[in-house]
Image 1 (cartoon, rainbow, N blue to C red):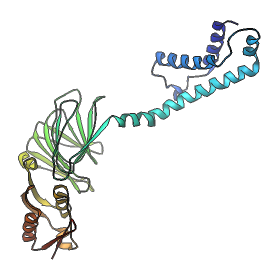
Image 2: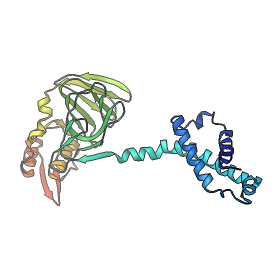
Image 3: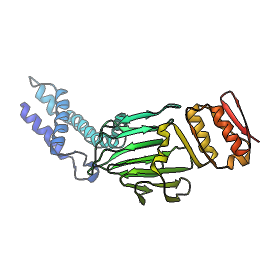
Image 4: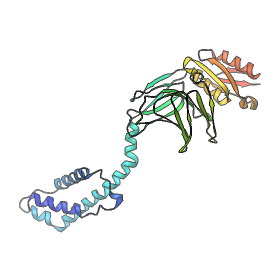
Length: 310
């Protein structure tokens, strides 16, 4: 039996398996299927003794045909399973490997340039996750913290920022997002252009310049107000503006700016709203003196922990 006849018989075995089931439609196209078929064919043929005296008899023996059939069945069953699992797991791992993570250190800001030309400035403690290169129909990234975005215009690929439950969607504009995971609210302020806001698949609002949305993480409630974009981005000039901030938000600012932990056992101080402005280059003692005077409280600093008490 010549080599062509052997290949024809093996092709016959390959074609004998039913690929009509939707679950087995794993080939991208006919070219892909042919490539896989040739790989299997070469592997099987390489394991079969070449023609010669007595070797055709080996090839035609039923037991050896059964072995070949078993090998074919194994590969034909394994390929769909492998591709299915690859689509579920391996591909996502490979995709994740192309993603980058940038984080601004304590008391520092960090500028990040994306592949599409967009520019992002991270406030201290903020973390940005983004792909090395954008593919698909959207430019998607995620943010934990505060950042100011200057998004390169591209009407063909919307720019989407995911911050917890909230998604900010733009085509090309500039805006500020404050969305630290430890806080109970997310604030998005628009400087230029239009910004769409959605949560849980529903559009909440369309923001215009000098408008902002305050989204309550726990309840999903939100309100849209007129607010100066310059005030929202004042942190870029080293200025911290707290307008009715919670104790948790104040503590986060202290942690990210000075690397110190702010705590209190006072229920009154823990429930208070804090409205103040200070510079990040101020000494922490200056800031705490102002906060103490504002809340009629006292403070002490010991082992990198600031305790505010009555």
